[in-house]
Length: 400
Image (cartoon, rainbow, N blue to C red):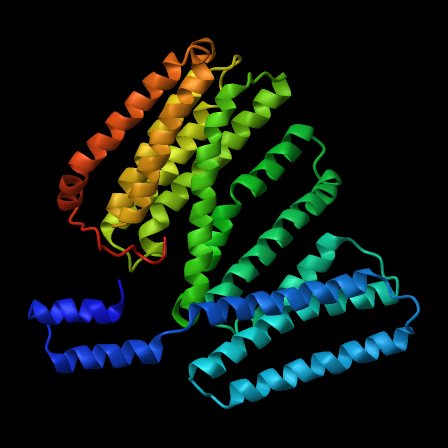
């Protein structure tokens, strides 16, 4: 529903007068950003970046090295000077902000292409992990010049890729210091599983939260999304038998102990990390963290496959997520989780009653249960919303 239509309804209901409506309309027009312009601009800059990387990768042997490096340097200086001029004007118009964002994105990616070109020209060798690490660290000041969501998401993808590549590279370093294989497995497992915690702490840096709220918010949001997706995939552990040697069991015990203390610490410090959020949001975060840990930990202790248990746990987990969605005032997320629960109930019959599926009985029963769940949701949705102080137009809290 458009803003003008909303303002008209509010005026008819005598909630605001015409002067207030005009002020709101003017304010929103001033602050609004054309989403398509920003999105396509970011995609265009990203396409140019990929093109430059492809040109470097093509190894254009027929071009002299000095020509390639000179062209790279001239283009780099041109981007830097243009960006400096745009920033120094301190123009707050949408056009200037858009140009600034595109230049930052372009400079961010062009730096990687330039480093790859230098490494290719001088045959410096080295691994992709080192290249990404140096690139990510050097471009932090460049990224912090931006303000938009597209740049934030692009940087999150870049830093996550860098983190993943360097964990693999870190394994070779650990081998020289850690003699026991099970300790090495524990360290690597902790670095992978607890990586969302690292990014959550990164997103809560006070300076970043205050001066780059979009960057901090997106980093926090995607970190929690990684935790939620990780908890969702844990139920698949019940679909396989888990057997291991004595060292594997020992590694698992140490791994669970480390993740338990890390989860407990994160749970305890959530109110300090998200001081501006409500108590309901803190409670929802804590419950999701604890539920994810319990599901992952319990799924590692069985020597046979139990798909039914996995399916039931998955449904229970999504019920927890639906409850958390209500606590953070997100009706959209609650609707999504309800739909996923219905779909999961239907798929249980594909997994468990394979022989019944041939006669269609399992499918019919699953459909009936799905319809009953949907009917119950329609009947109780309004009462649930009222119970939690929500409405269909409630806003989702922007940071978790």
